[in-house]
Structure formats: structure tokens, C-alpha cells
Length: 145
Image (cartoon, rainbow, N blue to C red; front, side, top):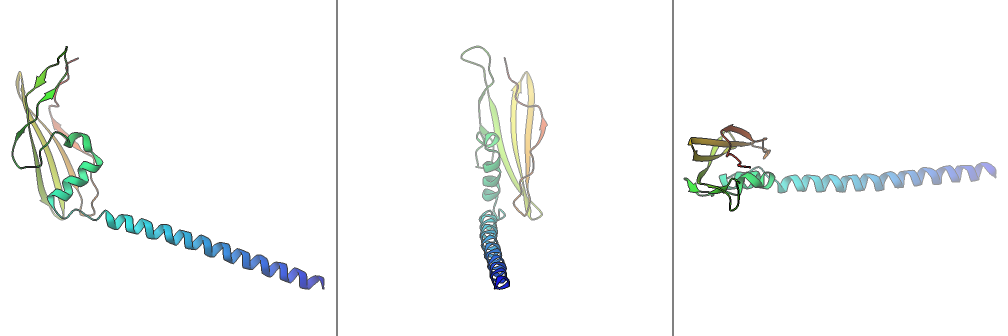
């Protein structure tokens, strides 16, 4: 009689283990489905506007002052100094170009501060939708303490 009880307890333990594993697998499968659907929602950018939107979501600050229309636009910037501050007359342009199956987004600021200056920020958006770290070149807009 004792061995029958042990067999029943062992069988119950195995059944409980199998049940816990199936619940664990089901929750893992649900998490995997959510991850796949989230990645599907972040599909690679197919248009220049979609590429710019992808960069803007990850790096909103530099893009705030740039127009999405082609060509140069005025984008004055307060660069500090005693109240009311010194406003530097900048012109800004955003360029978007296809590169392979991805995109190159270049933000350009031009200004005169004693002599002409130009500052660029470049982002690469891969075919998979990954946005690179920005590449800076030129003379950044000065700050006046």
C-alpha cells in the first residue's frame, strides 16, 4: 500500500511540473509574439518622411528647428549673453537622400559670427530602420556666457 501512495505522489509531482512548464512556455510564447508584433510596427522607413520621423523619435532636439520642406529656412537662435540675449541669424536646411536601401539625413546650419560658419549633423537610417549615432562636422553654434 505504501508504494501505491508514493507512485501517486510521484505522478502528481510530474503532472504538476508538466503543467508549470506548459504555463511558462505559453507565457514565453505570448511575450515572443508581442516582441515580433512590436518589431513589425517599427517597419523600415520606406519614404524620406518616414526616415525623418524615425530620426525625430530617437533624437528630437536637433530636429526641432529644421523645416521639413526642401531648401533653406531662417532659424534664429538665442546664443546667450546678458538679457535679453544675443540672437544669431541662422539658416537651416534638412537634406534627405536615399543610400542603398537606407537613408542619409543631413541637418545643416549656416551662420555668420565674425566670419561664415557651417555646422552639419548627419544620421544614417539603415534598411532595417536602425538610426546611427549622429556624426557632427564643422563649427557648432557658439554660446555666449
